[in-house]
Length: 119
Length: 112
Image 1 (cartoon, rainbow over the protein chains, first blue to last red):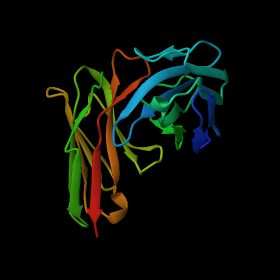
Image 2: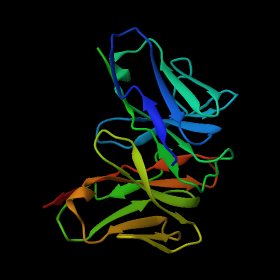
Image 3: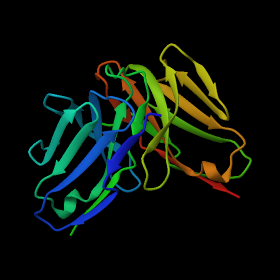
């Protein structure tokens, strides 16, 4: 149980275009999902917390107009990288906790990530 | 800013040996978690230790937590080639809502 599906697993796009990444909780509901970015051989950097039915909470330094997050249902959050540039190339990973309340003490379940390459 | 610092950054050992990874953090936590990541994949939760716990076991994994030193360690006993991965600690901050802050990770290589 507790499967998080992320799609697509990889995408190549041209500079200036937008890319949408989907994160779905397949067998549980998640009022809160988290979006991370990871550079090669580095740690995960939290970009934003996605809240179902309300605005996402962005971490300091993350441009909310560039990284649009929509959490329209209890099982789906999307991250749209708008007007992508080569420096946006990275590995993006979403995660969620089981349970509507999403207690901090329960583990995160991660999607398999999306490798974005902007040419 | 990153709360977790891990060492070593990379560790290479022979199959069957034990692997120890250390993690330090900066502020007060509710819990500390360890995750594993295979190359190019998402993370898998391994074990969680609460701030009022000192040691926890799960199979071949042993985690310790020293809140006075703000540090934790992950021990993998009798390592196997399949244990090759990156391992991250993640701090559940007291003042952090539901966020986890990840350490830099340790790249573990088990040589057959």
